[in-house]
Length: 492
Image 1: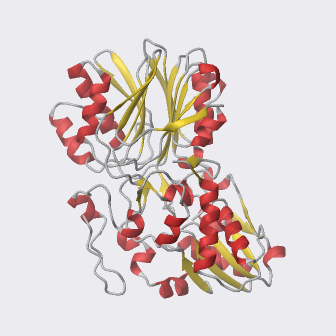
Image 2: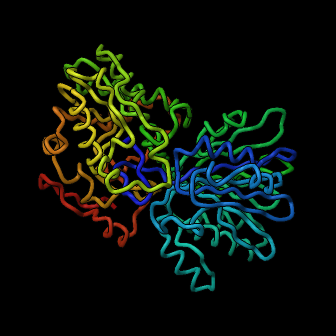
Image 3: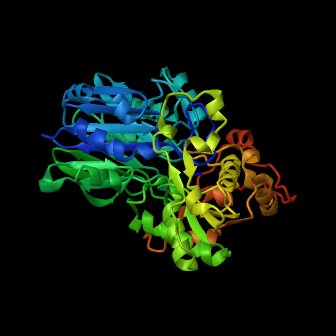
């Protein structure tokens, strides 16, 4: 859904794990640039934030729990002096809960040289890798897969005395999703898993002043960098005084970029693989209007990600669009815990309807996804309480039927409402007058201009591009049966 959860609450939507940002720019205030970049990417993670800066000799790091603006101020940024930086904003999924140790960038020592690593995604063979490294005497401070990756790189680099060898060898043995920026005292590295599951792009500052790497192009825009290209799947890119150099770390596999970036995760002003996220969302609304038309008076979008799709639905259907739901943009992103009485308000803490707009109206309400269904149920009731005559819920993603193991926070399969109920049962339980999801073919058709030939659609189809270990699959109940009795054996 399009609302944020308070810390400690289980969110009723898919959550992106992290944002990464990196800068190599001698003579520039790289810490401040990284701070602005992380603010542009704050939507990808609000649990913790961190920045590490290299000055040619060593690396300094500052990180803490909270939003970027809660962690950094003028004094903390001024203390981070150097010309290469990596930054991270975190939303935890697997591994460790909120803690300073789990916050990134992770710092590792290679002999007397420090490296700082920031990672977006999730490795699926973390337990195997951790056990092997522990058996070889490596010590860990947190429970994150990102630290496992950092330690694996450090171990090989220590043996070969070549950081790119360490990165390459680590890429050969880790599996899962990773978009990574890594800083040594004098260089910036960027690398991506061979399927390209999580996004990572490269930009250049004007007048050859330096290079920027970001999870999304909106991070490039805020610091004035021009988009150059994406980091290719399996590629290692280095930025230092000699400029940018690139090599293939591991062979690229079948492209499997996360299609949910276009539905919800990315900011609408970002461009991913040549496709405008905003236009993809408009397309989704248009396609959904064709697939699931309904008679109504107004089309409403659930802020923020549902709004462009609602505009597309309205344009295609001829039903007027209206701003009938107002979002409180700060309550959902605070580390001040609400009281239990306030918690019971649920979605009302984050969204507020406009009765003067919706009273007596038949509404088509556009939202990005339904995961557990609790927020959708509250949303429909809130609109009815505000006087809506009918509420027709339209979702611009297919039914979420399978857990994600690549950096998105989803429940075990038996806790996904679409995996346990039929469409009719979901509609009745949520309380909407009608409920419809866009088809998977419709979702694919919304991003027609993408240059690569494949997406990761595992949360909709169960077709996982990277094999899931048996223990992890069993823990997530991948073999649960569908509510209509269909077999749902895990397609591993």
